[in-house]
Length: 211
Ligand SMILES: [Cu+2]
Image (cartoon, rainbow, N blue to C red; front, side, top):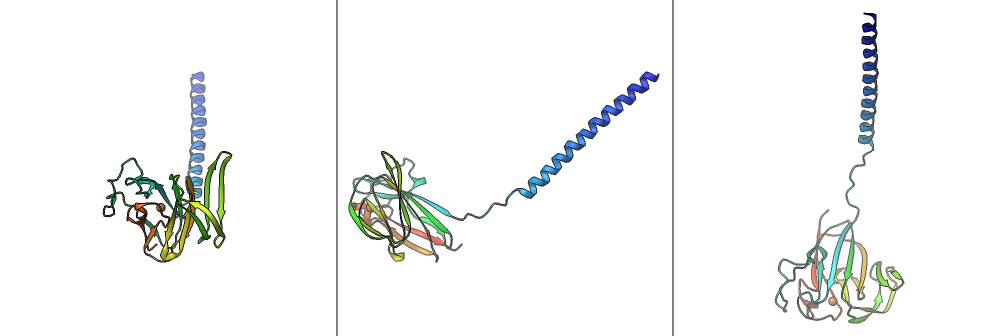
């Protein structure tokens, strides 16, 4: 009888220890949940918009080089271009927001040199070049002179005085904040073939919407 009472007491003690331990773990979990709730950062609105654009030679047939939105360069060839055809759904219009810094990353897979670019940097830009000794990044600051730089294409928005040289087989990056909403035509000014004057090839539009 005494033994049985002791056993019952022992069981109660063990149960009490286990319940106590459970409560401790539970309170720790709750505490952690509270901490998690208070320390989880709110998702900030994007500080920078990224535009990935490719320059693809002969995208629409011989000499119809094109600016192609990277997500459109999915192996689906556009129909062959002529001076009156457009690439259909594979347009190269770019939509960004006014007042938000927009970083353009232009990947030029064309190896052709079409002219030597001489002038002044219209805005800061960086040319990334893969060399035998590794990647070389050449940074140009706004106003810096550019002398006889061999290029295949340019990214030019005449109405905003943006004129970025694009050397062959490089990645060129620059950041620009569009102040006002509107539609801005962009184009290539290098003599790169029949595509340079065709919308959807070396001509497109930046559509800037209100933030
Ligand atoms: Cu071009």
